[in-house]
Image (tube, rainbow, N blue to C red; front, side, top):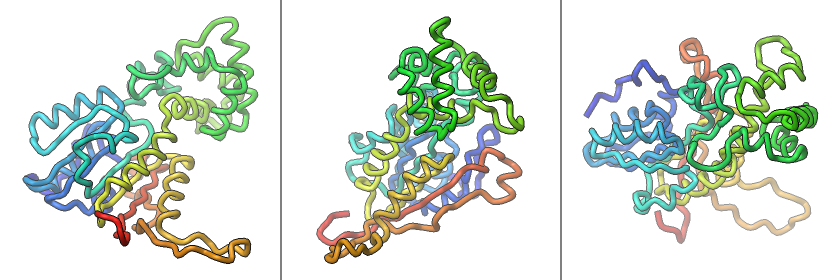
Length: 318
């Protein structure tokens, strides 16, 4: 087994690598699920800490990530791979005996952003796709070219917190009547012309692209389903680790843990309060990258890690 001190390969440095592995508290004979394999940085860190009896289960929506995961599995009998959203982890027979740890590294990966053909980036011109799994669902182009103005505005507001959502939606509908959107650069330029370039630090299309990506990939719905599935699958003492990159994801994760870790505040309207039984223990609150990591990996600036441990509940099995 490789030394636990080995760092991830230089070609891909995952955010919060050390805090994630510390938070998961990997047991050599445990079974762990990485629900967002990406390019495998965190997964390889888990493998380094597993013994011969340990197992690593890997999931991802992205076919390219799955190909890399299968290459890893081909050389390591401890690894199992499934091409699917982590929302469906409970449907995988490999999880039936329970898990000692679950990791979700949310959002879009650096390789996805860096490849123009995937259609995630507003800085690199490519097909307007944005699907993590290009074989399923509708593309970003299909959404902006067919959805109603009201639906586009709702998505931009709810998933991107874009204050100019209605204005942008109106402009999209007007432009597509002349010519449908096909390229990321086309949509990004429309939004930039509409809103102006601002201070130049943040592209004006940032929030809109985030919102459309979240929508076409059903990211928040998958997160809610995945958190619930992870809680059910975890053994007592097992750890859940979630890395978020924006407030919507982090809010869902924070509330999920809080609702299961601490009793709700008392209310004068509810004189009889049922005894609260905690199901999770919050481990460390919001964990962020330190100065050294931020200097080496600026993408870590917006990352927030939350860790929870499953508690024993009377009358329930592990």
